[in-house]
Amino acid sequence: MAPSNIGVSDKAWWVGTAAAPSIRYPGPYQRRSTYVPVGDGTRIAVHVFTPLGVPAAEKLPTVMCVTPYFSIMEYRTPIAAKLASKLAMAGGLETAKNLSPYGFAVALVDGRGSGASFGQRDTVFMRQMVDDMPHVIDWIVAQPWSNGRVGATGVSAVGMTAEWLATLKHPALRAIMARFTVFDVFSGTHPGGLTPSTFMQDIGRLLHCMDANRLGDMPESAVQRAVLRALVKGVQPVDDDGDRSMLAAAAAEHAGNGYLDVDLVAVTNRDDPMPSEPTATIDAQSPFVYATDMIESGVAVYAEAGWGDGGFIREMISLYNTVKNPGNRMVIGPWPHGGRWYASPLVDKKTPTHFDHFAEMARFFDLHLRDVDDGIGAEPPIHYFTTGVERWKTSDQWPPPGVAYESRHFGAGGALLESAPETPSVDAHRFDMSATTGPDSRYGRHLAGGRFPVRYPDRAARDRTLLTYTSPPLRADLEVTGSPLVHLFASFSTPDAAVFVHLEDVAPDGVVRHVTDGLMSVGRRTISPEPPPYWLPGPWRSLRADEWTAATADEVVELSFDLFPTSHTFFAGHALRVAIAGADTDTIMTLPTRGGIPEISVQLGRKGSFIELPVMR
Image (tube, rainbow, N blue to C red; front, side):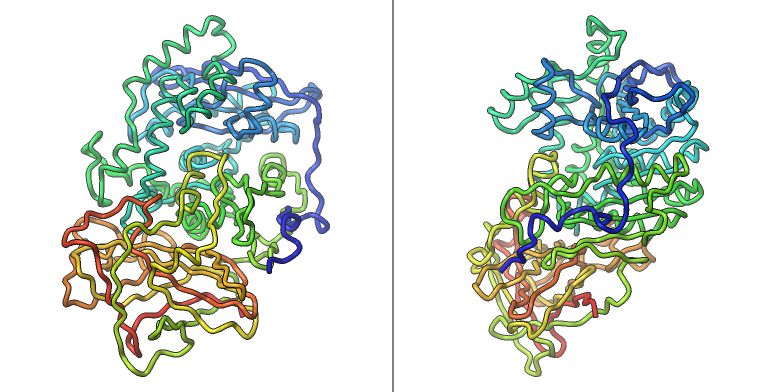
């Protein structure tokens, strides 16, 4: 049975213990927009939002959101603008209207080749951002309303640009809040050497529509497209573009844009050259490659992540544990991409989060951009949410102190045991290639925008076609916080296969709730000999071409990898379950089945397969 506090406990942790930041200017805001020329003369569209009622003598800190998409839609009516916001279609406007009342100027910047900006966006567009944005920051701090300090934030690709800005070492840039984004682009988009199909397809479609200023074509369904066309005219032009001619000219230049999604699908190895730019690899714009620059910048970094946010949850923890700058923070909530929805295993319905992301953003930027401490300075640097008990917790480090690994061993008859079986045996299983976690799971539709939550329906029926290992009912509550590590000793009938391992919570009434999972290509099992370039919870695999190794049917191989991080309490009377699948058809591209449908033979016994659980003692 779910706790009775569902729906009310997912609040900001400071409720009742610390004061929320003050709304300084509760009235409306004003928007001004213009083109800012950068080094080569390309005009970059900048939309600045400032609150009304600010005394003339007061200077405002500025928070930037630099996007490779577009910043603002031009709505047909004020009512349309309100409706678009409710449908999570507002884009950067949501950040501007929610953050400016706290006394910030918010600068929404269309990157080169995007939105209302001129120019063409290369596939490796980090280089262009790094070249262009110092000019934009210089322009910001030269404005009469600026206090000379700048921060940056954003979700997904906009969060990645915030990480890139930290590499500039610009003296005005003091803090960034990277939200639901990547640190290692290749690993984040090729988890375990596999490719999320739904994510790539959605991003590719969206980018082409945005760049051509065909925003009405972005949604997936015909109904959604009709609604959006009724709400918006297109990308918001700058103030001096009354006839939209400059916007049309900018959009025409976007026809020469490069598209990273095409390269992400085309490459299968980290060291593969990108088809659009053969002299570069995906790593050319991975923030982790520039971690030293981020550290030398001294910029305070706030990583915001959600347990259900694709592979980005692991990316944000890697960022936090690698770039160790003074003032760094991390928050991990029960959220999908963007943090709009409450995504605990115990929440079955589409439920909004009660967490105030923008109030927390204001607290962070207050401290670093105007030297005002709203209480955040005295708090532990990490806040994380434990599902099951549905409670916020704090820590000074990740993993939290008190976590130690405990093993659970796979046993005959589908048992999950505290001790390894004495007698060796083998579980043979033919993968069901129609297995799926559904379109709303970790790598599902939510990655295309904030309109969808992450939900895993009761998995009891789906588990019947999978290879499962289930523990006896627990005698006491068990909190798992961190990254479970699976060690699978098995042989495979095909040279390669995709392996998905799910950790599940089996309730006394038989309902099976998904807690976390991990995935790995068998051909990617080789652990790299060199040390990892950044912090990881499990083995480092470079995913280079020379580390791919075929499996043979008579060879038992070890497949060891971490599942995505979690914090979940399994209650007494519930059981732990590990479920093994060979496909996730709704979200992950299926590997070519050379040799037929893969069969797995799992080794059991004292030298057999097991999972290590990070247990909070």
